[in-house]
Structures are given as C-alpha cells and as structure tokens.
Amino acid sequence: MQKGLMWGSVVVAVAAAFALGGFEYYALVLVVLGLAMGYTNPIEDVATRVAMYVLAVLLPRIADNLDVFGVAGEYLNGILSQFAVVIAGVAIVNFGRVLKDGLMAAGNESDDGDDEAESDDGDDEAESDDGDDEAESDDGDDEAESDDGEAPSWDGDDSGNDDSDDEDDEAEGTRNV
Image (cartoon, rainbow, N blue to C red; front, top):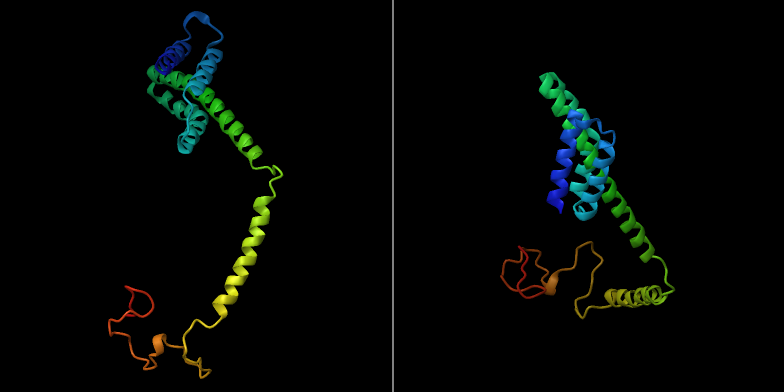
C-alpha cells in the first residue's frame, strides 16, 4: 500500500506540475495522499520526523533555484513544490501522532492516589540516615586518629612511603600505586 501511495503521489505531483487536464484540486489530492502515507507508515525516529518537517518547509524554496535551468527547471520546480505538499501531509499526521502520544503519556503520570510510593521514599531516607550514622562510627580499625594534620594511613602503615609491597590494602585485587 505504501508503494502505491508513493507512486500515486509522484504521478499526481507530475500532473499538477504540467497542469494536465485543468484539474483544480491537485493540492487537495496530494495532501490526502500525504495524510494516508503518514497514517499507514508512522515515523518513529525523531531525526526523520524533524527532517520531514524541515523538508516540507524548505523544499519549495530549494526547488525555486531550479528555475535557472530554463523550461526543464520550471517543471522540476513545480514537481518538487507539489511533492512538498505530500511531505507536509506526512508531517501533519506524524506531528498529530506524537502530540497524541505525548498527551496520553502525560495522563499516565498523574497521581492515581498511590501514596505508597511516596511514603516508601520517606522510609528510605530514614534508613539512609541510619546508615550515615554507621558510616561515621568506628570502622573496627584500632588505630587512633591523630590531629597532627596527617591523613590516617591504611592498615596501620605510618611509614608515609608508597605502598609498593603488592599487598591488598582494602579489597581483593586493589593496590595503591
């Protein structure tokens, strides 16, 4: 179906550029084809959606530069300008879909009266406060902390030298270098 919509839009854009048959509703047909294309093939990638928005706006301006090629440039300009109408239809549907999804997602984040999650957060803070008290307590190291400006050393090594004895200092597999 997507392939048929794409070929149909190309045919209608070419017909509109050449103004075949004096049909006044080419733009309406192109928008409807674009809306159908956007509905049947939604664009999930944000970068591709943004590219569609930008292309829908800028393609006619870019196509205007083709007029320097004489007669062929005028027709190419017309085809690309008409095809921008199809891209605008695709962009409109995808914008509407993203807007709907965003509004639906915003509705799901509302307060459903579930206060348990909020009360659990308060309990966790109280538990973490208790953990902070334990962190400040003696860690089992019998070495007295001195107030002479020196940082306490690990495992009672007061030599101040590099710990290059390859022994584990705090945890298995770690060394001070």
